Image (cartoon, rainbow, N blue to C red; front, side, top):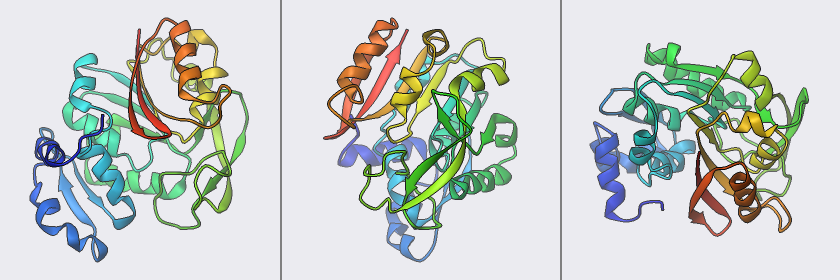
Length: 264
């Protein structure tokens, strides 16, 4: 369950060393980027106005329940991040487990450019994160169309579904790679964490990847969006993951999105 009220500020103090930048200067976000340093491992990054809400979701509302997640991972985890966006999840996780190795996939150039800037400012991220500008699919294909907001800023709701967000008025074509190809190209024999935040594409990836490939992931964290009442919904995806011997729990993010944890 996403944290609310004063608990958000407790999470902020646990995750951010200079929490006062948010508490005392958040009203300046309209005129400048806020700058933060994580703890315990310091990672320096900035938050422009376009990413302000995402920062709150990751570092304050704690939608991934980071402390509980870290307890489930080994000391040197291999992580595949599908839908890395601006890299805030990766920043938070690496601040807790510096030795993690992350294969990050993000299709939008504005978002990957943001992540690369953060990597340039924090040397160890250059070896901790392998960033790939691509969408991830289940079925093999070279490219796909995404619907996104008509802006050059970083954004979080680009989707393969045209009506996914009312502001997604621009169509763009992006390169893609299948989860199967990711596993083969990187010689993965296990995935300690498969994290997915891909605005509806989670269904294609999970349903259209061979079960044996999916099952390489000992833990899966997904933001699951209810797209239809057939198979592209949380209830159907939960049943499918359970058929692959995953134990599945969830908490609601809103009335059509669920934070799902699956472990085997």
